[in-house]
Length: 313
Ligand code: MN
Image 1: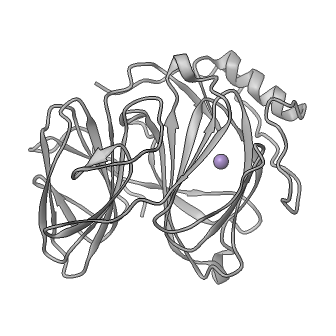
Image 2 (image 1 turned 120 degrees about the horizontal axis):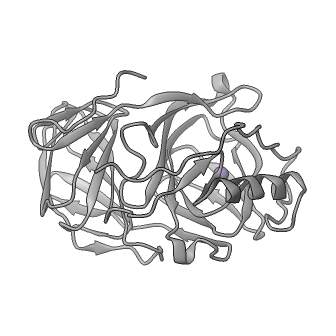
Image 3 (image 1 turned 180 degrees about the vertical axis):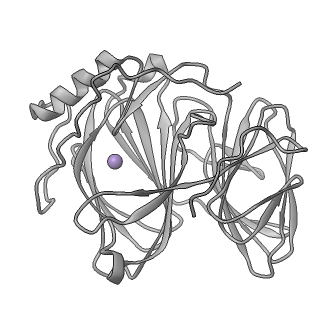
């Protein structure tokens, strides 16, 4: 599903971000479709990373098996459409990630976790998203939150709001910057108009179906970006089956960040320090118990300093 990246907005201001295929690593390497970050765009609000995967036949791919690894400066959002993942982290959390349930892990100063699809999973299908923490909170304490939102029925769509507010529904989950995260399941042929905060920029990720955002048709695995200023978004499912999408949003994140491996920081030095701390098994990241195997070693850093990147204006 990789393809060329179209830069620049279409006629009605929708910029199409195509995914590139990325092997997750591990012995049998499940592949994910990554739309953020990419050359054309680093962030949408504080959303700084978007991986979309499946439906993945676990019998064939081996499923997900990500050994303990560290994070700094971010929150991870796991949202499944199908299958089940066992999460363990150095806070001591041991949770099952299930379809329609948000699992939000905060790794400010440092956390580590493992993610393994469960034995009863046949098809694994979902998104893994990261949120950059703002400067004043980027050393936030480790945290893990779980939330199963109800379904809001609109004329033409079912909406589940896992972060922020949409369609009259507000998630109680705490974030460090204003954010929107919601799953929208559109009826065949339906058109839905959603009121949006004009301070927010948005990204609509299409999972299944063909969906028109304003006047731009989005295909599965594409992310349609809209700049701040809109008070509404109009989505049309042009397919004759339900279409599933995830809508992300937030006010533009004005800080530049340095992203490398599983770290979000501000400088090259901070990244190098975090890598050293992980290599030295520092208690900065704590310990994951119960994972049957060894933790992931950090890859080699490039010899040249990592460069900060910001939002594209
Ligand atoms: Mn992780």
